[in-house]
Image 1 (cartoon, rainbow, N blue to C red):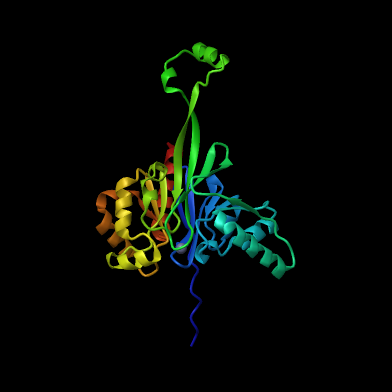
Image 2 (image 1 turned 90 degrees about the vertical axis):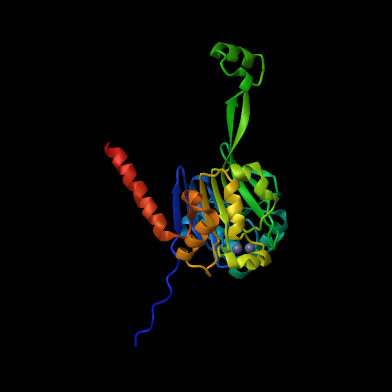
Length: 305
Ligand SMILES: [Zn+2]
Ligand SMILES: [Zn+2]
């Protein structure tokens, strides 16, 4: 008898939600890494697929192994591939343990890997590129945890000056007046692992155009499991979907207990049909591939027209 072949590795999920790609793998308890290449950020790094290496920043939501296990490898591979020193952005409570972990790796390997740790408290921000900022917010999980929103700060003409001639504006500016105001546009929100909490009332969380949220337990009967692990249940998701203004809601961290077809059945039961067009499941490789092929087709047709 010929033995069975090994279990296949899950493929990287990939969604193109213009102008951003959301790529990665996320399975509850096993591994989570969600990379947005256009923003230079990977949210969590439970494993480090080659595609995630290019992330200049790893925003770490919490220390559970399925979200943090590949951090050392990320630093080491970036260095090995000549990609520059990697940076982890994490809660101050994790900075010490991460430093000690990397010190242990230096002892194990007999060589130093360069790394950068940036501590971020809830409601603090870090400039990641140009006008883009990574903001942390407090979430509720069984370990110290953070969620993140990437905000773009756009400079706009002051409301009371709209309609003035260019010369008048120049004159005001020369007098030293501030003629612009800054508006904040939340682009992408990543919840990490969390139960329901006050953070789901935040303007920046509800206003983000792409909301990447965990939804670990998707079966109606799994309510108590969700409560014990401080995760979201599909009923919480329904509440969130009613509130968020996101054009795209990307579900991550689904439990392996539920297969993909059943997951959609439970989602539709809880959310109703009207919101399903906003929902994407990161690990639904087949459906996301079809969607991507369609996007390719459309782009091609537009090119030809
Ligand atoms: Zn997790
Ligand atoms: Zn966790």
